[in-house]
Image (cartoon, rainbow, N blue to C red; front, side, top):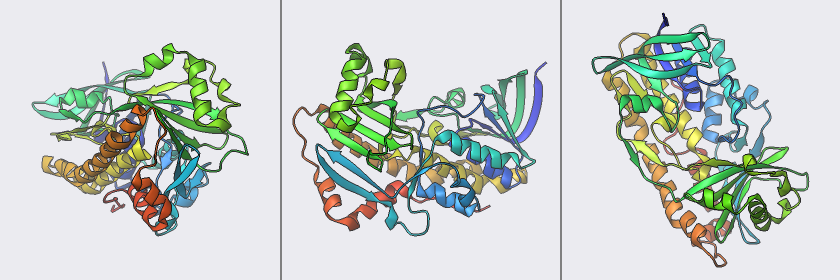
Length: 402
């Protein structure tokens, strides 16, 4: 017989949205179970940007100093290279307060930190190697789920299930919630290359006709994202790893002496870019947040931070009702009303950049001229505060209210 557990809230997915939601709800006195299907958080090629909005939340929780003891790289500005010319894009140092930088930190360190804080709470349970499989219904209402863990089958009864299981959300599919797909002109090849002390001391992007490369400074190595035309991965693979290495060396010459560390295509991971959003984020007994509710473009690297903002809003709006066993369907719908506007505005800006900039760069076969907006940002330092605020704080950032 399956083991049966009961809780006020069961969160599916131990990513940024799921763990933060579980931690904040438990901190507010809600009984929470979080399910994570993997044995640990040590998975590469995930977003590594902890933006000022998230750093501010850590400060509000009284955890910022401890959090920043973890290895990280601070970026106070971002720039882009077009050909041999560097253009300054965003100035995070202009943001008010002490959280005026982007912290580049491996996501597994961030998740381990949140999990460690949450485990100190008596009403928080994190079940690793436990995969949610099916939603359980009472009529039209979700009443829990079935899962499989290290010791076999589980039945978890819950007043609310929060689906934070990513862009391929099984719980979203189980709930039959319709998704609106906005499309994307690109995919991304992720890989890492050694970093040397003589390399530039900042994270940045390189742009050339038909090619774009984002580079994140992880200290000992560069985390690289090579933007490719949507669906073009197989064509590039067919040309061979040598051709790919040569293209990276041409785009970023200082990497030429180490591209041979990419031995074969197993060293290069494909991220299939999606941009979509649920029309309805919930049904009775279920709420979707993070990528399960809205897959974001990698433009601006804001996806993790949007997911965390969803978690904060959900905890702010639902914790007291869950704790008092007074949660209504209207309470759950309020999370979408709170978060849909900042999500849709952010996606609209991402789609504009995808369709106007990324698409034209990938299709170009002649030397590129920097767009007017890039030239203005480089020439007028005050203007760099606008992209810094958009990327760093986002639209209507959330604050801890419990």
